Length: 245
Image (cartoon, rainbow, N blue to C red; front, side, top):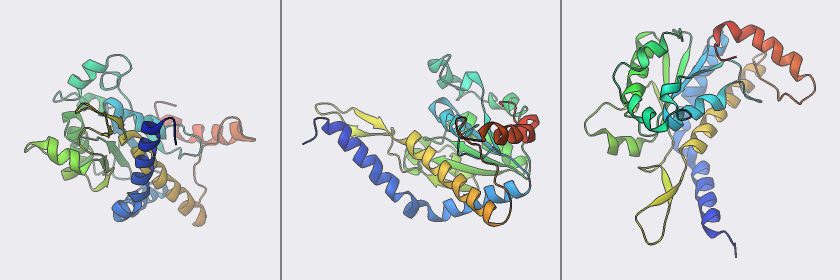
């Protein structure tokens, strides 16, 4: 018997939910892969945006060993948690906050914007999706359909705007593990599942590109043979368009 039964139960439940992702999102995963592949072949960029903890998914894809170099994170300190977590909650709900941020990221019709938002209702998220749509950019949402339906209260959801919706299956509140003797729950899952979905799509695209005779722009881990030379070539290709390299 496990001496860490709660940890074991959490990991088992997370693994089970991971296992259902393809069945629940098969069409959306294919559509997202198609969109990112089209972007790659047009020498476009895959922008990634999220507020609060969801910004972690933008950083997960950025300059990632085994990841695509066309990934560009949209990062702004007020919307992140490292210098003011409480304040970031207020900023992500502030109308107009995202407008000047997106002026630094000239996404267009050849690009995609992947927006991660578990609740799918915060103002910055909704406005970012709307701005991208006006620019002709394909919007891919990584969100919880169940949570966003509960949180909306009549408001527009990210899932209502996005061209493609990937449902992470997270319950309202994100956490999946009950704390006995209370109504509290621990063990959030949206970050783990969101990262898995994005990496699965990028992996699909990379293999498709290679199969079509195009060199997939894949970063190598810095300690692998030939990594510096390969990565330097990719940095030279994308640095002028990725302000975070």
